[in-house]
Length: 303
Length: 260
Image (cartoon, rainbow over all chains, first blue to last red; front, side):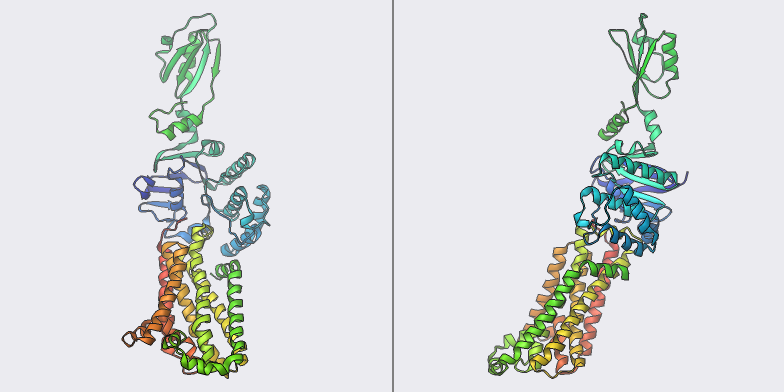
């Protein structure tokens, strides 16, 4: 699979351990990549390197095959970027700012597309930058990042300050962009923000990339829980002892057995059937717990 | 580049128009007052201490032309033109501090072009200020009874423009180096103040006369082209220094990691 972004040992440290250290990012083209981590973990530093705001101290990075520092103008022609807490220009309203960007990019059609996005996000383009609320500034930033139809969209905390309905709408919009074969990178400190839209996720903690995997693989890795009812049949925890990838088997007073497992469920179901299970209750995978475990740096990732 | 420069001008039109109005009306006002006290000024000028004469460029303020040099070209014009240019130069750091610069840095414009746009903005602001000063003297000169041709006024104004461009470029350089608007403004004004005082000291103290050869305030000549030959070498020195500082500012801005 072609990588829209590939980095090797990409590093920018403000102080030892502060910033982004040794990142080996691999963002597949045409997918939505959720870049996750706690506040201050290094997401914005990494994104600043990707969009040419700061020059890496070590390592290398290729964005759409270009070096963000030495090929910045060519790269910026092909990407749309939203920096963290990006302000709106004070002296422009949304309309005049779109026109300015259309002039700079020599893309007159950018204005009409900007209007479409603004309408979709319910953004009033007649207001000046200093009159906009946090949410509306964010909307304007998104409109200007998307209006030139970039091949790659890099958004730092794009849903910051947006209401839940609009957050969902942004998710739909980003999904549409990926479905057109374009690539989206969005950072967030919350898995909830990206799990509906992302194909891949990368976790950064304390300046280092600790995980990078398809979202589906994250779900597979999660520990799941299932509860069996056996009616009048007495079953003990040891009856499940031979089933692979099971753990924490408990038997309740009413005889129900709860089993935690990872990976494929077939062996567990077969054993439960042999023992005469009459009911089964599966608990949904709580990715949030998995995410929090990565946040905390737990050795085990559990639900 | 032109798009960006025009946008900078539009976004700071209050600053530009304010400085223009200040230069125009102050110049005209000062010069219109001259006939009301010109007969008293001769004796007054003779009694002035050398230190004051040095401050006003050693101009003979008892004559209309000298009065124009002493009031407009020694103080009002260089200070206001340079002040406007310093505000323009430090606006780069202000845009970095309030983060509005980020929306331009992620557009398909190289840092060099962005820096050039800002420098052009500094030059244009200084030029607009110089034009206002020129118009002020063209209108105010006859009111003061001065018999100076427009060509002499233009020649006297050109070094003011170059000095303003230099002061603005200094502020731009500090902006590019630090991203700190307060420091850019402060150092820009420090440059003017030190240069102004050094010029006065060079006039007063023989041992320090060499200062006038290396001092940009001395190079602008306080409008001496009104009454004598245009100092081409000093004008070229101002332009070359401005160019060097401007190129330094752009080069620094191109390389520095911005606080964005």
